[in-house]
Length: 230
Image (cartoon, rainbow, N blue to C red; front, side, top):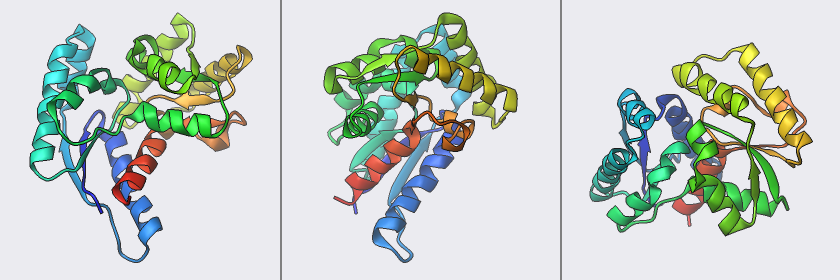
């Protein structure tokens, strides 16, 4: 089994989910008392959020690159960034290490094309929805068009993530708001919805809608388990 290095804490709510999914995945594959070989370096998300809000992505890139290199030096044979938004700086992280980075959008893209989809709705932080690092990767590598909500709806999605989900708050009114936004994206042509923030799965699941949902945290963890056990 290969050792995975996780850069987490953005937020720790979803990092805890990753830890569980990775261990469950390894146990399912190997049976018995097997669990995953994991190294974790967790960020203080309050500091990272300030850098995001100020647009200081260069500092974010430096921090995550340092953490990735530290994990590599500690024995990690691959790196996983346990969040969607921070993949904005993934190219810099890749340049700082000699082990592979398991990109979250690649795990999502592989799942989508495997199911024969070419147009999806994307929910996530405003950074993930509006900046090209995510939608362009899906389009260029997998031929997938990602539709995003209108401006006011994007602000609502983003606010709920940062003021509720990243703090462990799950509110029914927020769930209904997300479901309404999903329905609108489907009306515009989305064949499924990508939950492009690793916390959204805490709020909305397959039992809440008939729309196919692609939970990025779960897909990322599944891809990591497959890589670890190759």
